[in-house]
Every structure is written in C-alpha cells, then in structure tokens.
Image (cartoon, rainbow, N blue to C red):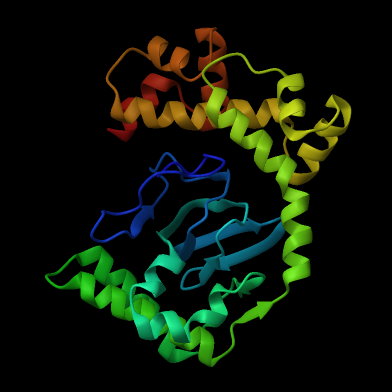
Length: 286
C-alpha cells in the first residue's frame, strides 16, 4: 500500500473483490503512516498499542480495540506510540460498494450526499458495532471459504448502524472550507509524488501550491509539522524502504531511484530515520 502517496491511485483488492486489506506492524515499511489522501473510505482498527492520527489537521489518539473511519478526500497521517502498535486498514470505494445493491443504494443515500461525513471515532459502547467490526477483521485475517460474503454483509451492517445511530453529520459549508484550505497542500504533495526521483526545489513546490516560496514554507510546516525538504526526504526514505524489501538491486541503485544522488547522504538520512543502515534494514526485515 503506497501510504505516502499524495493521492493513492492503486487498485485496492481485486476486480471481483475491490477491498484493500493492509495489516501493519512495526516491521511494515509504512509503519509510520505519512500524510496522504485517497478518494476511497478507509476503516482503521487498532489491534494492539496506541496510534496517534491526524485527520485534516485534527489530532486523535486511539488504542487497542478502537476503530476510526476516514472519509474519502481527508488528508491523514498516523504515528504509532512505541514499537508495539499493530493496526489494520480496510480501504474501499463506499459509493461503488453501496450502489451495487439497490436497497443499499437507496437507504445509504444520506451517506453519499455532498458535505456528509461519517464520524471518525466509532463508539465502543455499541456492543453490536464493536463485535461486528472485530468479526469483519477476523474474517479478512482468516480468509476462510465464503469470507467475501461475510465481509460484504458486515459492511452493509456497519452502514446500517451508522445510519441508525446517526454517526454522521452534514456540513457542506464546513467541508468546502476545509477542502479549500487543503488544496495547496495536496497539490504540493502530488508534485512530490510525481517528481521525487529527480531534483525538486522549494520554488517548484511553491509553484505547484500556487504560493510564494516564503509563504509556502510557513504554510507547509503548519499543515504537516515538517519543512518541505524534510517531508520530501522522509517520503523518499519510505519509498526506499519498500524497494529494499522488494528489489534485490544494490543500495546505490535504490538511492538513485528514490531521488538521492549522493549515496553517503542517503545512508546517513536513512539511518537517521530508521535507526539502522539500508543493508541492515534489508537483512533485518528479510
């Protein structure tokens, strides 16, 4: 799963079962979830430890057993507290999923209206909801015969509970304001995703965001907590982690592919981010 991508454009799941399922633990290259967004709905369930999330700049801390719903289009990032955190992400297109069933398309219409967003934190006190979610993720873990039917049924039940308990709000004006505030950030992140392998200057990013260089740096840090350069390098290191696990080429080739022309700097930056060298990372993860 390309968590660090500004807008994920990959196919989640398969054509016949388009639900992406991504268990994440401390060995996963995306353990620290970089800022990203995608048009699909994402359901994150913490299986162990604590996860600190930011959704469009709003901070949320969740613990084992908690479930968070991330609306499509929401910029989000996640930072595990410690190394014992485990969480699982389920990603799918809610609109397509509901429209496949005539009854679901009709009854789920309130959730598809512009300006409607599902409450991010699912209440644990609803026993039927918590048990339903745990069963859904257990089915995805085990993949027993017929699990696809169970998962689809569980998702229909989930949306039924959201409607029944009115776990959503309709604020079209607030959504429009929030989306407008995030457009420059999304444009800058998209530029990084498309050009990370080459040279990227602050002027390039500022132009992509439609801002002056000085204002862009202030804006970007206020939105992400990082300078544009630090964010870009962290993004490149995350991509390098994936390549080290999926590509047996030398570290030098991985560094070049990820936009680092100086291998010594790449190694220093990699160690500063992960605590180990690229070769140690490849060996340890393997």
